[in-house]
Image 1 (cartoon, rainbow, N blue to C red):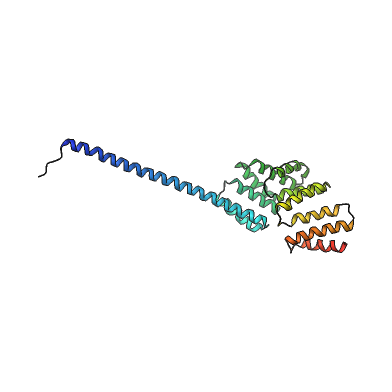
Image 2: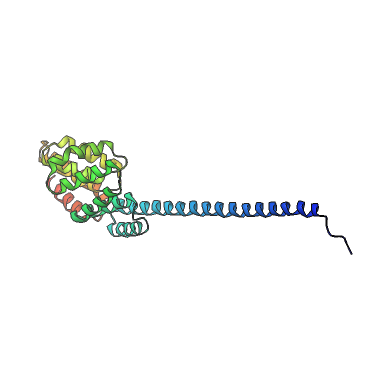
Length: 240
């Protein structure tokens, strides 16, 4: 019969086994922890990607003035990211463009609670203030917001153009409308508003009608089915 290992050999083998088990357990723990971090990073990346997708979908819909599509994008965006400040600001913008001041105020309050950017909060507070009939009070903030803003700002441009036209500051109104037209070249609305400046100028009936006709044509080039532009152009041509 083979001889049993000597006590010293057993003593030496046991620590080696324990060391192997310990290393194996450590590797397993590291793999599990590493997998958790990878999965967590992928989850956050997926959420960020979906938020960007919804924001892009919303912005595209608003550029096309498709409020139904914009509404669908905002609903899904908020359902998946209820604490996303940009989603609540998007809901504020949508409600504002629908003329629903109460819904816009509620969305803006939600954006305020989750600390949306201060500039955006100030802008929308001023826009809602102007929409409530307090244009003079809102005007300074609207001007600052437009100066600081990046990218197209149709709501700001429209609010300021309306304010400048009401106070007969035609030059300032035209500057704002030209910025709007340059920022969003496919939007017919700034050209429709320019016709109000044409009508208030001192160039005489023929001159003002010709200028208005040109702006109506610009609007129709962007939206051939626009009834207001069609009627306006017909009237301007009749006058000339």
